[in-house]
Image (cartoon, rainbow over all chains, first blue to last red; front, side):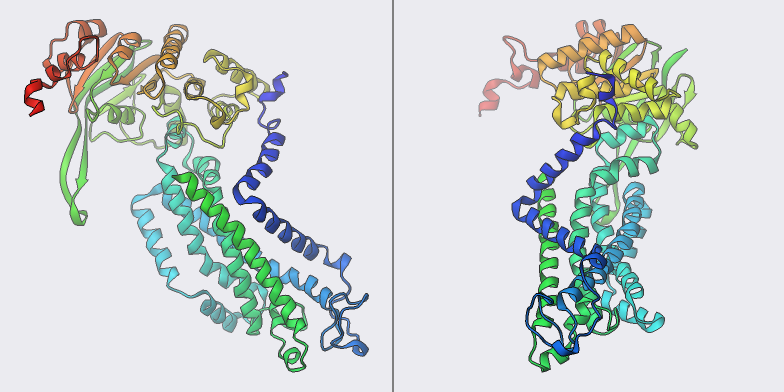
Length: 291
Length: 278
């Protein structure tokens, strides 16, 4: 064997291959199906400009049409291609939760690391502050932010990110507290590794699976919350296609053409179910290992 | 120049009672002093709760002494570190190997990456230099390059403990504290690791502070021994003398507690079998 075998870089491919097998072992076949479904939706959203025609193009001769070759899922009451609107809608519908979860996790994990690593009074102060934040309902905060800064995806997402942060921080903190007193952390301390490097290189990677499970579950909630905000008319504004906006189409219901509301509902339910299922499997697996 | 000088070390833990009030104070280590010469090996023996591990934690800086001083290589380490340079310097002076080989290595880090991290921190070696040093370290503890890419879970208890020893050696410390380092290993593996420790000391001139409840282990790897009871030193001297001709009654009982053919546990407890049967 050559000397390169010991380099951490050379060890990466095997680790990656192991990762897929390990994910399958953790979340099961159903979980992998859920992941595949989400991947397809995400890919469709990313490739929307290439695969889907203009979602706002109106075909007034073909309103509330049934499925056809040109409009695989039919059209809405303005003759807009439903499939195209769903695909374009996936962009904002998935981007919103991504912003929410990304921002919330980006703040929560460092906060949790400081609390768990320092312990004592710092931990106490941070934990009580998080408790305070728990008391504030996310949707209410979002409505307040919209009142101050106007409607749109960014204000809504940031407001939700603030209210989601303590949930992720609390879970991450408990994981860090559990890991903090293990001998491998003490060994790194005795080596002279800085507290920051210990957190980044050892503590946080070792609680990544509980962070992941919390993140996936929160993603589902954020998707529903943002859709609710769109439904209330505070988030994405029509005519931009968004699943939440599409659900809010009372005309469709009055016109006796409910499919255009049902499709986005179904997609929201499927996405949330898939994400939550994967998150729950990760969480229960983590719990099983911790014992 | 001594490797370790510990003077009147004390550690008091405040035990919280109900409602978070200070209930009482527990003295874990009470006025313990010792010196370890360079390249020497000191054994610290005692039953569970005698303060052995607290001493190890104070030596390595994981716990602060309530009073007393510790110096390693004539440099004081009783106060908390003030700079990252000092923290690294202390790492190059004293290293520790823990009891449990299953939790003392990062489960996500391969053995090679673990050693690489230490070498990056303490040496100026370039990539190739670190690589050959990793192989050298693995070789010195009886592992080879195949183990470098293994995660700890793929290794046996003995191999993990060897990896932990390699990590401790990587910074070329003056002292290694071994806190019950072989107690979790089965007997044949224990013997191999003890032999390895003996060899390493002869070759590198590192000093050991060897903490154990196992008298046979202490006899094999140490020159001097301290007997600790309830945080106090009850006896000290050359290991042979302490174990073969114990002066203190507690040491005698500790020795008598080791099961041998014809051993009578009741005699050690100081109770007659008839009394116990009742």
